[in-house]
Every structure is written in C-alpha cells, then in structure tokens.
Length: 114
Image 1 (tube, rainbow, N blue to C red):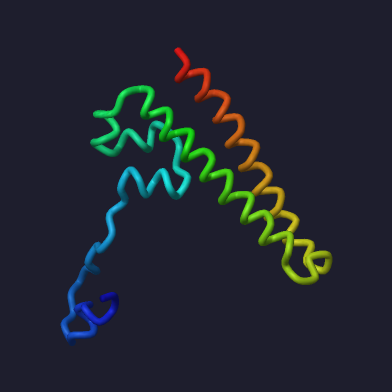
Image 2: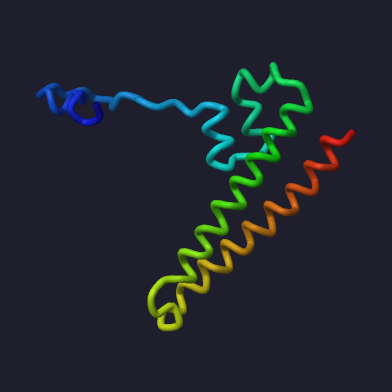
C-alpha cells in the first residue's frame, strides 16, 4: 500500500529505511543491464545454460537500446532545443552510449557463439 504502511506514517522512526524492492535478474534485464559481469552477480544466472544466458543478454541489449533511443527522442523534442546548446552534450552522450551498446553487442555475439 505504499507510504501508508511506512514506519514514518505510523509515527515510528528507524535509523535505516526498509528495502522494499530487491533487484532481480529479470528486473535487471528489463532495465537494460546486459553485461555478463553484472548479471553473474545473481545466483540464478549460474543455473542457466549458455544459450539462455545469451538470450537474456540479447533481450537486455534491445531494452537498453530502446531506453537510449527514447532518451534521445525526449531530449531532441525539448521545446526550443536550438536555444539550449547545453543539451547537445546530452545528445552526444546518448549517441556515445548507443555506439557502446552496439560494440558490446558485437563482442558478445562473438563470445557466446563459441
């Protein structure tokens, strides 16, 4: 029920906030995390066959690419973009990340095709 159940709402105070959501392998994939080094931190990653791991990686790469393209479109569609030259830096950063994702994709295809 969200904030109604929090300790603060009940008048209780604690030193540490409760961790409500833990990252799962599926959430990481959905959010576009595709690097095997990170995905291997999830215990279930080690129970998957190499083929299934690669399918997860492919899905995550497409998710990351989609997120970056959405960010690019959002920045590009800001009103009076031409009057805000500092946004060009954001566009360059997104383009750089898109290139990195494509390079990583190629490397992972080679690694997982062995």
